[in-house]
Length: 123
Image (cartoon, rainbow, N blue to C red):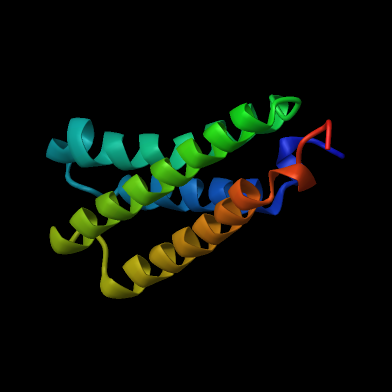
């Protein structure tokens, strides 16, 4: 097994986090400590939880816990996308694109949560 960076779910989550970062640069300045901070934090946390869980794959329970945390952060990111759309900071097309990517990340994380033995060391 390689590193966490070799995981397709990590690559997709990282790409989405960077896309969110770049588009959030256009959000209003008064959202800097609210929506901008929150959406960047949650999207980046998906990646950090994946990497932490991958490093702790000696322990199935810890691996599953971190993948569940990543899934939770991915779901939180969807909520912030809802706000960004409703506040008209992003258009419908961008929203749907990001939401679809987030759904795919969620499916990959669910697979990892439900099939941890395919990813842990001592299986």
